[in-house]
Image (cartoon, helix red, strand yellow):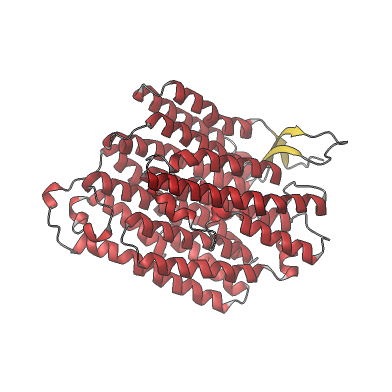
Length: 490
């Protein structure tokens, strides 16, 4: 039965379908660049507007629902496809839809500067990927979430293999093997077990696993965590560095908006709305999985230290940084959960800034390796200024977004009386500095042998990367806004 705080609305469905419908328009206009890109920008703005139109209700504590299909009671009772927008889904959906606008602008400059092929297909797949990302954000149950989760994989495959060479196809095969393989073999069985054990797949505050035996609850949780390979947690992470063969805007999409964010969001959704903090605390599984995530935090950072390819260093940074999301929510403490959810927002702005900068460097000087970037701080001041903001946020320098996240995670670790995790977080911060500061040292303090041939990327790309850098600063400065919005989640 609907509660006073539940409202039925078609707006979540319209927000999801905006980019899906736009994909057909982009395809029809694929040979007319100006109209094609105009369609992409218009769809992105409309999508963001629809998402933000739900903010007043979310702020006031309402949950917006949109039933789509309900199976007949005699066939599959309590099962169907439905949408649900609460504070958690709104945060992810709002960030994804806003960053699609900037990624579209950035992509126009990037693809035109390099005269990339198949640009029509590229923008079509981008629109479809955002359809899947928003679908995951607004899913009302596990069945709906799984449908959109798989849709993201399929729609982003053509982006990963965009270059259409042997390396791209090898990466694409690994991409599908990891993401669809774990989905079918681990994630889907966990969903089936959940329905068999609880009789429902609906997301519910406090969870639906109350009364389920500890053995089955623990087994399904392990299947869920292992099955969400999009989260990039080791040992299910190898697809992510391989996918860096894709164009840089695709890397930004994979890391900051659609794929890995959908993965960690899914785990947070399952922990809070399928199990519930109380059940996991009773089972004693939360802290165990938090330590497991800590292994990824440290190991991925160590691997990042050895990468000279800038995009590869950023890829391993993502693997490490997104494990903060899993670590925080598995602490099962108020501040741990707040830090986890805030990291979804903070990392989105910080990491997309860094990837935008990596792409701008490639367009401006055609360099991929950090050792070849001497002196670009002087010849590319806008790009490296934004990179510095993103890097400092990842390290955790106040008042940037990353600092607000790490502060919450430290508080959450102390609330859980896990001093070892406090030490891990502090150690990971030192490792973050160890792999980002050498990039800044090379850019700002080393002399460039060919400064005369170095220049900034096109203005439209710089506008996008400076905007996300400013966003990184604002998320940190106004982190309490996001924390207050989470008050209905925890």
